[in-house]
Length: 55
Image (cartoon, rainbow, N blue to C red; front, side):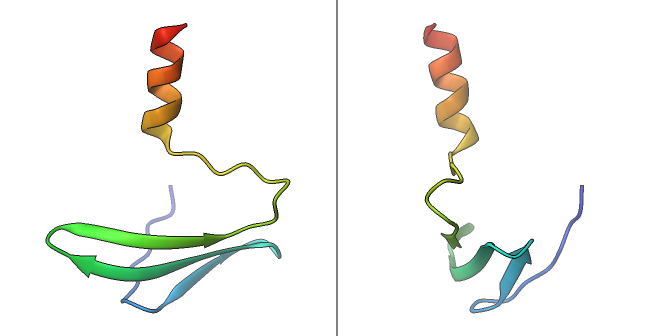
């Protein structure tokens, strides 16, 4: 796992098509924005885990 430190407003680039930007940091939470092509699915892991438990 690669661990990076970013400040508010800074971005991380994954390949040519995906950008992750730190939008805000407040009260122990980090808000991020993800810019990716529509054909690349972006999901929260917690949601996928809940769906797997239901099945």
